[in-house]
Structures are given as C-alpha cells and as structure tokens.
Amino acid sequence: MQPSATASASASAPSSEPSSATGSVLGSVSASVPLYDERLTAPRSWWLLAALVGVSGALIMLPLGVLPMLAGLIVAGALAMAAVSAYGSARIRVVAGSLVAGDARVPVSALGEPEVLDAEEARAWRTYKADTRAYMLLRGYVPGAVRVEVTDPADPTPYVYVSSRDPKALAAALTAVREERGTGGPAA
Image 1 (cartoon, rainbow, N blue to C red):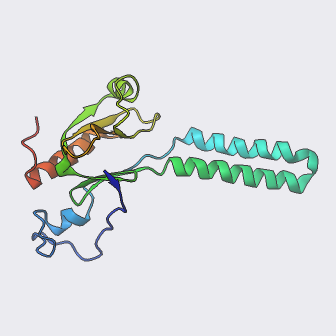
Image 2: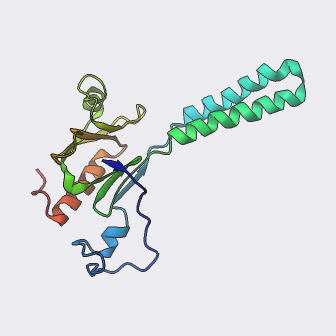
Image 3: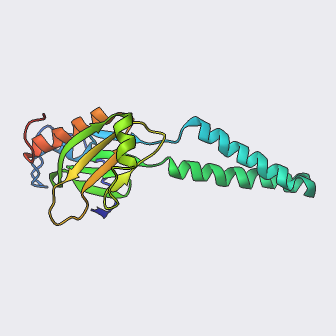
C-alpha cells in the first residue's frame, strides 16, 4: 500500500458509456465519482474542549495584562482547534476502483471480501485482535468499522481496518466495485 494523491472528480458531464480512453471496465461515472465518501470529523465535544484550551491560554496570560491575555486566548484556541480539525479530517472514499483511506490508496482488486464490524467487534480488532502490520485508519469516537483482508501476496499488510459511521454502506461500495470489476464472487 503506497500513499498517493487522491483522484479528482472530472468536471465533464458523466456518460453511461464505458470509458475507452482509460481502458477501464467501469464507466466514466464510476471512475470519477466516489461510490462512497465519508469524512471522520471530530465530535462536537472536542471543539468545546479546544475552546476551553483557548480560555486556559487566556487565564495563563492574564497576569501579564489584557493584550497578552487576548493573545493567549487566540493562540491557544487556534492551535487547539487546528489540532482537532487535522485529526478530524480523515477521509474514506471508494473511487476509481480503489479504497482511499487517509493517505493510503489500495486497489479493490488487492482486497478480499469486506467484513462489517459492530461496535464490540470493532473494539476487539482495535485492541487485542489487532495486528501491528495492518493498515488502520481508526477513530475511537466512531463505533463501527470495516475490516478487509489484503489478498495481494506481495503486500505484507494482512488487512485494512477502517472506522466508519456507516460500515454497511462502505462494505456495499467495496463489494459493488469488486463485482463490477470481476475480482470477487457474489456477496455472501
């Protein structure tokens, strides 16, 4: 699995005919429009905590005067909010025959059948069942997840674990791409 830039959506009008320029089995709509797109944004309570970090910065700077207090509020609050925003910007997409999870882009042809994990099973795969070689895009505040075996024998990664608020839709999108490309059998 190699990190790479994500595919950008085509600005032209989608057609239902298969794309002959790319030689793809999928039509140009499937190649440019994500079948699944999710951003794992941070919960609202984290934003409140970031604001409280800004207030803490203001209180620390209060003995130095009003202007340093305002500077402490702005700097500490901005840094905390930037951290929350960066952590909550993880994106999961199924586009152009690939699973794009964070910085990783994995062709669906190199993946096995997706396994939808409920909250308890997802917690187990995040903790005592986890393999250190696995690629994991996890967020503890997202209860559900999808686990997909990596079938490429040249890749040492045993599986991909992706937290998702809608794991059934993510698994359905992966299954649809596998079936459309002919890399997997019918869904079980």
